[in-house]
Amino acid sequence: PIDPRAGHVPGAGNAPFSQNLTADPVPVFLPAAGLRERYAGLGAAEREPVLYCGSGVTACHDLLALHVAGLRGQLYPGSWSEWSSDESLPIERG
Image 1 (cartoon, rainbow, N blue to C red):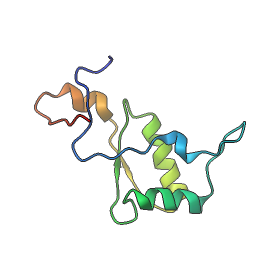
Image 2: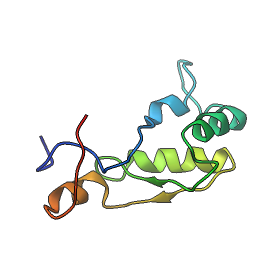
Image 3: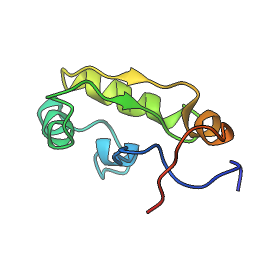
Image 4: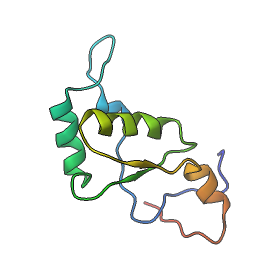
């Protein structure tokens, strides 16, 4: 493992960036309406999500997908690597 603790930020949802893409041989972003439906289903239409991943790279993909969908989000640039390194911060598993 790269990070000192396994788990996720309490209350975090999961939105794999690969689900923003078509299944074509050369994948592209889904249409804006499809992305909006996906992220609205995850609550992003009601509240602006804070996105993170392992190190902040793939979360940027989701941030761009939100923009294409006409929604907004924020990046937690430290992502899980930073969060899991701070023993004072809570984590959830499962």
